[in-house]
Each structure stands twice: as C-alpha cells, then as structure tokens.
Image: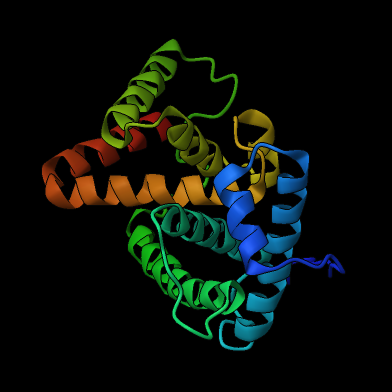
Length: 211
C-alpha cells in the first residue's frame, strides 16, 4: 500500500517557501505551502520507498507529519542550509532519520501491544466492570497525560480501525491517530519499565475487566 501522491505544476522557489512559512497568514501562503509539502512528500517517498518497502500508507503519513514539523520548527529557529542544499533535498534527509525514529519507537511499543478486546466492550451490563474500566481510563490519563491519546489506545484495543477512531476523536486523519497511538504506547511503556510493580497491577486490572 503506497501513499496517493499527486504531482504539482506549481512553480515556487525556496525563498518563497521560507517567506510563506514565516508569514503564513495569506491564502496564497497556504496554497504555496500545500504544493510544497505535496511535492517534497512525493520526492522523498520516491527516494526511500525501495529502502523501506514494508511501511504502510498510514506509516508514511505519520512519518511525513513528523518530518513536516521538524522542518518547520528548524526553519523558524533560523536554520541556514549549506550551499547547494535545497529544501527538497534537506527534507529528504529529515525523512530518512524520521523513518528510523519511527521504526525504533514502533519496536519499543511492541512491549505494550494489547490484544484486542482486552478492555470492556460496549454496553457491558455489569456496573462494577464499567466502574473498573473508568478507573483504568483515569489511571492511563494520569500516566500518559493526554486524554485523546488514551482514547485512541482504548478504542484500538477494542478493535476499532484508525478510520473509525478518527470519527470518535478530535484527530483529523488516520496518520494522526496512528501517531497518537505510538506516542501513548511509548509513554506507557516508559512508565511500566520504570515502575514494573505498577505495570503488573495495571495488567491485572485489565484482566479483571476482561474476565
């Protein structure tokens, strides 16, 4: 599965992109940046698709989202490109490192891969289990510190697809939901590794909800 990139015939220079990033308050700025990122996404994907063939469309969406943020952040902090280096080639380098970061995070979060239906199913008739499930949700929010990331984790554990999760949360794309899930799992994994006894307690509670 590969991203559906569309080519663009819009002409722009790196200088125009930099001005649009700094201003960003005009419709023309938004249009130029839209074409710029569409263009560099397609270019970077063409460079790295053979090297990272196993990445899915959702994986690439997360990677490009992270790469966009890194580029914008660095440029706003005054990044100066080396001579002969263009924004397109610099962005392509960012993507390569972003893929490696993504794969490393994905490997770490496998520690916390929770089988589907671990959590309480909808319309559970037993109040005690509903109350326990709510306590677990609050516990996860305390650990992760982000209600929406917790919501994504819980919905995914119930078997929801990312398309369905988008409809149930404030996220606007499958890639954003995937990113939220990875970040939530990373925080939870770090907590469990730091406090193994609490991790055992949490797993026991999950089993009780599922029992």
